[in-house]
Image (cartoon, rainbow, N blue to C red; front, side, top):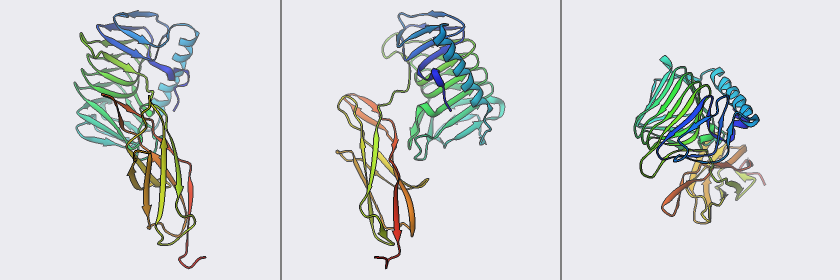
Length: 318
């Protein structure tokens, strides 16, 4: 799904945006039809601010359209309201009995090697996350592809780490010390940020992972049944002189057939002699992960290589 012109918004509110103490918003702020912003400073906005101008009105319209799109999708599964505590969820559209999602502990979202995988959570009433709760992304999951559609209000707990776009009809509250990697959108009412008295500040950060590019080659194509074939993936990208690290998945169509870690040159290799006779559409998917940058971490964006059609012939074929 798409957010249209609202994609660059870290915060959107129908009525007001309020902040107390130390808060930081990284991305555009849009208000429509309201125009009230309080608590800035000491709150900081690193981005544009639109107060019921033409740009804000268009962004609001696109966000409402995205909300209706998310709310109108047919659930692929109905799941318990209590998320986290070691739970792992794969791509899909999810609702819950009673319409309230609660997140405690750590929730893992697993894209299964698909960087375009979408996660939509439909909460008819509310979304509440506990203090120090966390959302982990794995196997190519991206913050831009996570939507939390909330029929009333969302509250993100103190010192929690949250990922994805919250599209709430009424209010979004981001409590003290929380770090939100995504977007807080309160379509009809107020986005509230409760800041900290010392750094680090409560933060809402628009997803902005450095881009990567993945290429793939085969050591032997065509090959014969039983021949070992080595696939070599190369991942490029740069963030202040730092290159991507971590894992590459190798896929045959939609099925993951192997994985390997990137070496210091950004190369990952995988060898298999298990391919059956026929043509196999092989791709390599860089699934990202934290890369050390001084004392901090940067998450590079996942990327998928073009398809290499690996042809496997009969053993006696010349």
